[in-house]
Picture 1: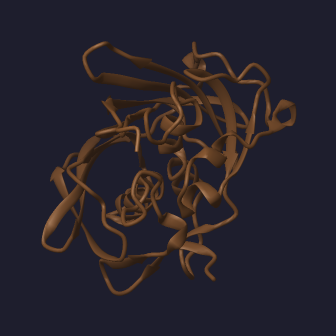
Picture 2: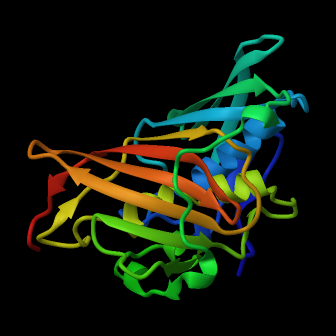
Amino acid sequence: MTDSYYRQLGDSRFESTILAQGAWNPEEQHMAPVSGLITHCLEEHEPRPDMRMARISYEILGMIPGGEFEVTTKTIRPGRTIELIQAEMSAGGRTAVRATAWRLIKGDTAAVAAFEDEAMPGVEQAVTWDGMDEWPGGYIASLDIRVIPGHRRGRGQAWINSPYGMIEGLETTDFVHLLGLVDTANGVSSRVPPGPGSFMFPNLDLQMHLYRQPSGEWLGLDTKVSFADDGVGLTSTVLNDVDGPFGRAEQILTVRQLPAD
């Protein structure tokens, strides 16, 4: 039994728990908690209270194996008002995920603040949903998922939450908690069901642009999924917290036919 997705083994070493288990392969980790853990490491890297992360780009370089791994961080481009930082997750001598994040200086722009993305209906208008039961894995089983009526394959609005912490024994910030749920978008409104005879559509990346600092426990995913006719797809999501939209996420997909058995 565990109450977190990861255990910390040392300065930069971690171990995944069953809660981080992926949906496509039981031996790999789901990208959602991985992105949350990497966000935590970026958040802890030479912190600047006068700055915040405004864009995080995760490149998935191969299978993300369960078990022990290391996350190393560094500053690529230091600056007084703009910084670029990086985190790499490595296991078995191979880099599995590389992430870069732009940190921007904070300032008072309340006089011109405005958002064009429309807010989702609130979580109180969402209903319980068992549509994710078609997905295996410990990560999916860890979630509380509710959908706004009208949710369908390829297009939907869902609110998700998790009662579990990111790292055992450490408090999880709202920022890490919410960003550690974003990758779920690719499954919550998938165009086709997973399984034999259908199609697989794993994402190769996760790009997040955050025009507002999010807060709270519930993440709203206002998602559209597109499949082209040549094996490429895209999951596009407007990200919400209980106060409204705060950013956007994109995931490029490799769409492949699965054998019938």
